[in-house]
Image (cartoon, rainbow, N blue to C red; front, side, top):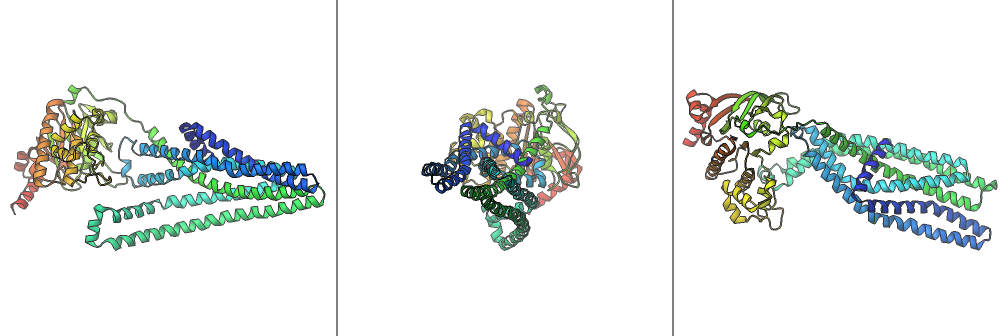
Length: 593
């Protein structure tokens, strides 16, 4: 019961804060309808007694009362629904916003890489979908509780033995709660399976992956994998459903036996002259109502209990984020940041991994310089960039910004002075102005600022072709689909919206471009790097597999196995004849062919 009270208290507090008028009106109408239900039994008994006693006025009065109570029972709940249905929608919308805030509220992305966290968030998404129903169920549960109390009070006035019927009505509630707990445990245990099924469905239906799947003939295989996962999920849930139905059925059977006993006892009271015919009718009506009310209550309790598990998960995630102690200090003075960045013994290990991805990196990245980071796949290049931009906290070591440990700087303060275009950049399907301007909201999507960013990214032609207010993406009727290179140009322009970054990062900026487009992008990058160096003494970091563009950097860092194995200028590294020279030779021979 503690979980149910927790759930109702939290949901009702949200609903009350969102719209007090709707909440109060809906709850009042439901309560009036709840009072009308036991009045139906009283009025029915009164009509029978009036007729039996030959008292037409009494029978008529009770008949009018019965008609009014029946109308109230039937209509008040409908009118209440008009109010609490809209309130439930508002509550669901509020919880969806809160979920988005929580998922994106952590200072770092290390949780997002944890499969257990992904399962947890997936469950929360499903939980939020149930909240609209739960708000309605919670209000109806309150009305049902009032009905049960009033019905019980009337029955006890007839005979104290009817307390046994009330006690028997508790049995299905207890059995239902236990059944619901076991059902939730099974559902949570199957969360990984349901996530896998959804992934396979997205993979099989996504336009981006269908081309490859059809050409490879992998569609049947994916269907079989999905079928196997669904088979395991259905078997587990079917067993849980059977256990659930059995427990609930036994609870209902116990109440059914008690109900028959109550009716028989009512007839015995009539035989003894301690009750009237109307009291028998009253007992039958109220006992039947009690059975209906308890069955409804069990169902509503199950709904609320399921939601309580979700709200507990919600509260736990909120508590974790609240307990996360974040630094609040700002950045050092601008003059100090000219010293650039320094990495000392930097290490990082992904959640659940057995080994470090970065292993004791020591680097100096002087202010006003451009740095190229090269290495084979898995060397740790992208991970290094994520640590530099503050998306991950180091597992060990530290990053110094102008001599200040980045761990002591407020994450938002550092991110306001960084600009990055990652390899898996976002395709923001909004208007071109918004898709670019979101990179620096203080600019307010101003025409001049967005146009300047497009010019610097060498994407001004796209602005002329689409128009700043033109819509991007196929999700809109008037949307304009873009090529991979065009999307990347939009992403680069978004990156360049930041006017004074202390750190500018480009991760594989030419991965979706042809050689000519890549060269234009590299030229734009070099120009931007010079601007960053001249205006704020910032550091630019450039990651690429194409070494033809690396030689333009002031400093080159070679990563291998999460360690720095070489660093220097292009000429120095070629003379050294190490790993960089080998990579350069391999690519040069490939082009020579």
